[in-house]
Image (cartoon, rainbow, N blue to C red):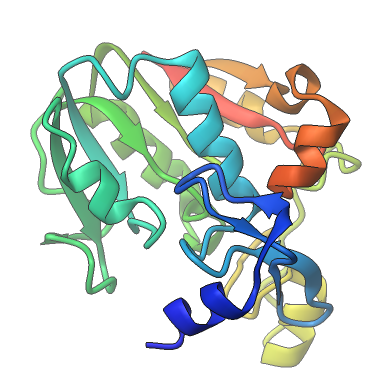
Length: 232
């Protein structure tokens, strides 16, 4: 209910949400321990990663024109209705808890047959899954040959290896170390090789290098964020 009011109050010309094209004098802060300033769009509630993904799908893929059967894990509010209304997509959503998901399912034991989907979007999910190897194997199993997916995760590219520590049980401490209390790891650069070990072909897409600094600031993107594009 507050969203249209905030969008109206923050109208301006400084920043643009590329998902709906609306402009604002500033975006909202977002985060847990140390909120990031000027990152949450008042209109679509998109964050940096959502706007980057939207731009990438729009400019670098045929997602908006080709007929695809798509599986979307934990569908984000910024995308859900837009993707659902696209006539070229046979759009399926799934999650264990999300009210936006049409199929309630455990990512480690999915109710889909082998080779079911042309495209899989699974963004900011795997960092919540204790057995991410099993989850990746399930994603590989249900993706069709020549299919593709994008599996974004919060990643610290200064780390060579992924960090986990199950002995840290205090929620506040986990939030400080992992970014959120319900994250079970911080992925390092080895994330891409782990996907490759499952069988995926992985392209580490540095899409922000193709965008001007002015547009990165206007769209409030995270410069240097890597898009993990996987193929089977």
